[in-house]
Length: 371
Image 1 (cartoon, rainbow, N blue to C red):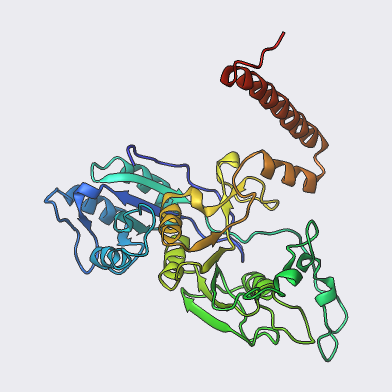
Image 2 (tube, rainbow, N blue to C red; image 1 turned 45 degrees about the vertical axis):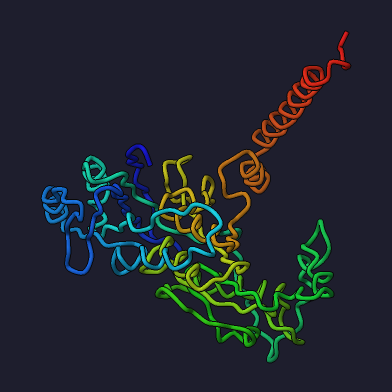
């Protein structure tokens, strides 16, 4: 991280599915900063008095994101040398700053100016991926749950589904000996269709609110629903499923907690995203401009370290703010001018790339000449 970053703070509207923003600080590695176990010091001997005074003046405190102390964070990373297949991020330099919400933006700017700080930024509150506003049917539910598996079109072959029914005919096709960790807000593990291979909530504090619970329970059902004659069937019903809530600990710490329980080949599912820079990090009911949590450095560090150990991390495929995501959103919103513009850009890009490829052939193979 060669330069300081001070990103615009979000103007989100808290609700049952929106959390407050998080102020994150990345300290310089050479400062060997320590803000844990009653300490506020630099192990390399640098002066921290100005930083301490700043935090005190704003009624704020810093604490490591990824563990109780910096030493524990480093020790946990060092415990997996044989499993690491790629360079890892130093998680001991990431801190979460707790302060009154109205002071986060000013505090971010002042912290970013410190010589001990590499970067300071405010992350918008984590939100649920929302597709629609479906309301419960007014009639009373039946006394016994019917079999809904015929409605699970996504179990069928492509392009309608993921071909799960064929996968089930293969050895291990139902996820045997695989662990899946769902990272979001809350779940109901007592659901009648979630009685097998359930590990429960193993980290974080579940968030209150029916939206969090309904979403988490629905996600579990998609890939972990029991094989029986009621409800639905999970895509990978033989996998052991557990959950980590980002409530109270933040998204980056939740990802890291899930990773510490994983082996190579296990899966972490991230069912969360945030407002991105397109609309100035503002919370929106249509969730346009929302992006994957990996855009923020602490979340990215947790994800990068997990994948370096062979752990599979799954996020929304169109969460990155590109043309693909924009076209999907435009189609859902029936934004015809934007759809037409996107189609023109894609077609033009395809034509230009083909032209470049044709000229490239001539440069690479002198036998090819254009008259």
